[in-house]
Length: 471
Image 1 (cartoon, rainbow, N blue to C red):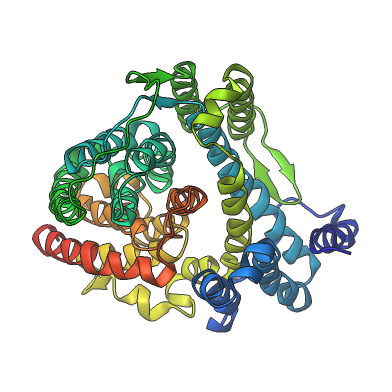
Image 2: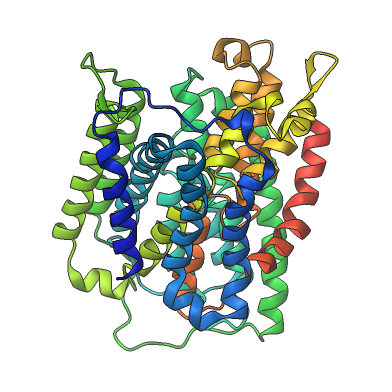
């Protein structure tokens, strides 16, 4: 029996005892959990970091099973210690309210972006590459970091196919397009969308984060241009080989740009439409109808994109399903094994991570510098959306107060969650997708720790300077 069948069997065995579970099934008590509950999540991270280097054949064949194994590394002890009702509630709550919407949004953006092809040949010069990064950064806040990343990564890779040194281009692409560029609106990055749902005004992030976002983006673009110029000169200023029947510059699959607008509107609708219908209750988890409608619309949009975009267009775009499959399998293990870590954080000063929580307050006043760094560093290794929400609530959870007297605190939380999502491959979902697409097209990317060396050397000095100036 393969691993997926074991998973289905476990769900089947648990579900009969919960068939009549009351709405509001108990969640795992974060205040009671020790740090040992974080071990499966730590092992999940170490597997991602080490196994592709130590045992590449085993990892590439079985990473989905390994991911699920660490997910069960939390669920099985939870089952025996807290009982089937808690274990099944946490499993179902995570799948229905977090994992499925996450995968549906990624799937729709990935599918739609894969149908847009930039025709013609772009020469991967420092000026052209910097222009691609700048365009993706500008659009990321309005079409989402995932949408912008999926739209621009393939043209960047094609433009640099003839170059010897190109890993740095993908790394800066992750820094800018997949993360920092999404800091100016709730559409840009999931943490900011959660803030919007909690009452933060739509354009609050645009006005308040603009100086920090613009400063970081300009600094990174300048650094990139200098670095790429040095590599370009070192390579002998190569020109791409001329191809017969070369296409003129243009866009193919333009209809997908309209579908992008549909994705944005569907996401925006789920945050603004409040239907009067009673939410759908499934074993204690509340499924809001606006979120169900959003996911159905997103799947319909993905279906339209597949139907209306020619297969030839996708083939020329180097489109395949492998990146979304890899991200879906790995993040299943991440979403499951991270449950106790988020529960401990939510317990605040009553949880095992209380010393961390105490760092964000000094003499009864918020320590905004610590809010920035703690939200950011935890966002780099945890999902940045729930991390944002945890610190939002620690800061009081009142959007009116946080936009007013505590605006610097909200700024610190928002900036930390979005900016430092770029610090690791798992800090934000597009990071892993960009890496998967690059590797699929034959570009060996740095390991988990190798990528972190880039972020520590380039991003963190900039974060330190800007945080000291602002907070």
